[in-house]
Picture 1: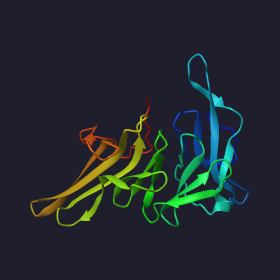
Picture 2: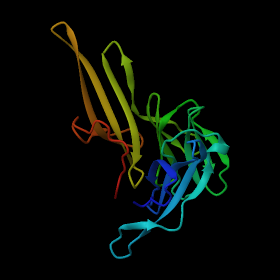
Picture 3: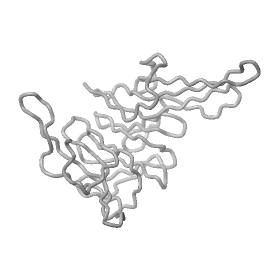
Picture 4: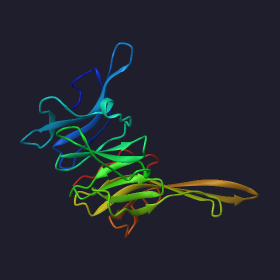
Length: 232
């Protein structure tokens, strides 16, 4: 296992940084009484076999770039690291926002999308935007917080139509032109005087402006596809 370098470090979540040279993960260290003594965001550089191109381990040890205990962060969610490795977006539980930290110094640079973020942030490989799961659907926003665009909508507890749509876990394509996401649609139909509920699960792909939304799985996707990734 690539990250089996410290048996005392509990890894909560991990993901490749765009470009595949680093892995970002949230980890914590506990003392003998199971109290958290370290909690933060780490970056680990990956070594590759020059012949096969397969990952072989880590280049040195992991580097903690944001101290969650000092910063007051509590989320175990996978962070979104910018492709140039200068900034990281963390889903803040308290304000339901994205807090952007400096990778070099660990200091808070800005806070965007306050009261809007439900989870699953992911930085575009071209560095210009962040996609995340919001309360009303999947949202693309500029990395400076501007130009909020809903590209896929959620409909929850729609009593009139008895249809609920939940979308989540968005991930960018390598060229930053499209996004893949989970699409769950539940319907209630009246059969012989009783409502029968059906669930249709799919993986959808959509352009970054919200156009050309397509179900890749024809409603037969995995029930829980997270975490997802997109490979060249």
